[in-house]
Image (cartoon, rainbow, N blue to C red; front, side, top):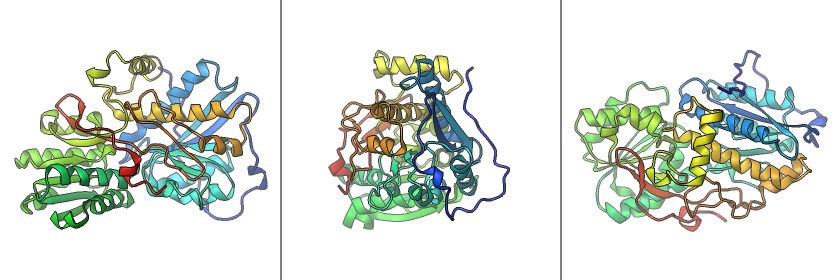
Length: 406
């Protein structure tokens, strides 16, 4: 198996996140032979379910290098482990800038991991591209012109669920189980915004911590509220705990599961596929397990890629599709750069994606950016789990519905 990603544990003392940076950081470009890219991922710890994003991206760059690289330059992808710890992530990101001298950051995971370094990177004019997080913070080109997200916004996803509830379950009682951090708050806020006056139908909402090993008590309280709809927003492992507990107590509300946890490998299979039938979520990428895509050339190419470059990857893990599609988007940016791989031009080309369609995106979903538009993907569709795959249950929802502010 080809394993060329670097997963490095931090051993250095905490480095301050403030203070002046070396003047030579500005204006750094690629060498004639190499493009050095930095990344931080939770390869261990409570969020390790998302490690396959970084592993897939590393494997994708191996494939690109095997094909000759970008205009003859090979990609060197330094991806460090943060052990699901935001403080460690901040240290690792700072190390990538100050010691490894990476050209730019790509695809690092999470809100709390990326937030501490955002100001520093913007001060030094170092691109922080396609962050693996749907927080609104990554779409602020006026104040942070060097930081850009990739996936749809969590708040927009909350609005989608609100619209679905209003359309099909109006008047029914709603319960919300959400992760006690900004990720959880964003989706919950979007749900409340989308419901408007119908927010009065939320009869109970309870939080949990990412480190919780049991949420039986929360599920029991939510069941006692009389809710007929349960919206879940949190990590895959906790989603599995929720589904298992609901099966144990024979509670079967309409279950709306956030996109980040809509993983057959990391949430539904551990919960029990039988117990997961009927779960509703959102999608913007193809489901590798859906037989509808078995003859799709793009999914066949993805399957061949997995065989050759990431054979240990779980085909049921949607994060492998996410990592592939995100890396594919970055390669489009680098191709657009031509021979000018300065930081300034990389950011300029990231702002100039026009109707780019990842080969693994669902039909109708395209990527567009601009100097005032730092939300590459603003479309999603509702899907429902049938016991084997995610099946579409609605049309693609356009950016205007998702509440875009541009």
